[in-house]
Length: 166
Image (cartoon, rainbow, N blue to C red):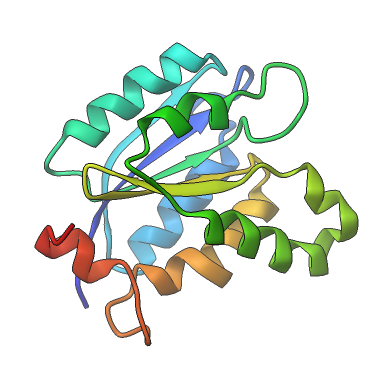
């Protein structure tokens, strides 16, 4: 298995290290699959604070994948997509589409309120997930876990992330 260095960012105005169940879930899963936690941070839902952390991780040669949880809805200050999209070199429309598709089976039409998205920046894959632990579980078990596994066919992100092929 090829181990990746994965950073986890939680976007929330209310969660902290103790109450961040979604971030903790993602960390547990990535480590259970043999990946390394590169960094973890929690920031308030503010476009510029999100971009500041994300920009550092995008520039960090040790980080290969970034998973963001929170701030993807339509309520209040939800602003993860607005913060992240300008930093993408390439958008990954299929991730958000697939996430909403698999989510539909679990939460029905409420999935239209998810602005989950993905993309590439500086040869790093970035996944932006809703803040609920259930949504993180859906994204990890049905999409992300497979795409971060070298043996998953016909394609996955591991070769791109580990060889620097653009």
